[in-house]
Image 1 (cartoon, rainbow, N blue to C red):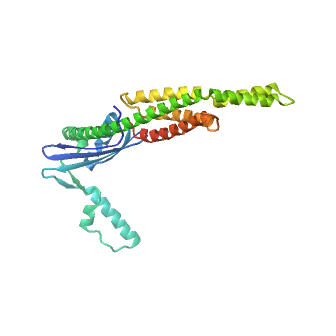
Image 2: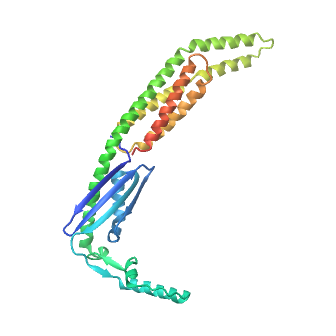
Image 3: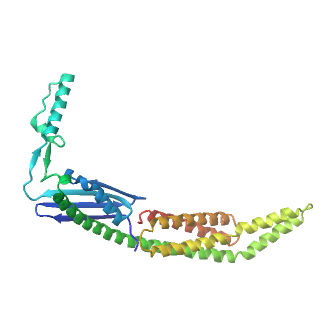
Length: 300
């Protein structure tokens, strides 16, 4: 099933004395990228959380906000060494620049890391660390499940639209083949005119005649391009049915399809007879490919 890279999910775990809520947002990105906003006491788990996201969500730019709420009385501790360092720094500044402003207790308590909250040091308490790790994993799993569900819904919509456009390209390729088949007589008549014109010249150069014939034949021949384009369309449709990460492979196929479409257009835009109809079909093919390339940027 095709998955988009866009999604949102939220997961929550309720413990005996705390609640962890994780809000997860995913948008398209060429590779995997994840950013977390974590409470200070949960920051040691950031690397583990990113690894879990990468395994499940594979690609996309992900942003996660983690909220930790206590449902019991939380001990508040004053980090005396940090507070003392702030006071020394303020004292040095006042003395150096002859400042008279006051640095009161309220201001000191608002400085980062002066007050600490929680029941202990996660880094040095195995039981506490495992307790929070399990809670984070549970909340993240639920958030990721919701993201994947939303990615699946949007992916299904993208798949239906892309399949329709790929089939339209296939139909246009068939129309080009038919147009060029019916153009055989026109090509023959054009070659005949050129041969008559050149043979009427007083100084007919056989090499020049051969060059003119070869040029006109090559100018109207897009057999190889049509064959490759048909193959690419078939591979593209097959990938829409494949499992796993297919976005990059779809993007590569579209690049190849774009190249073949350009070549067909260049060979038929100044052609004669029914080949001009092929040029119109080639323009429509290019338009469909551009729309597909935009959509594939959001496919995992």
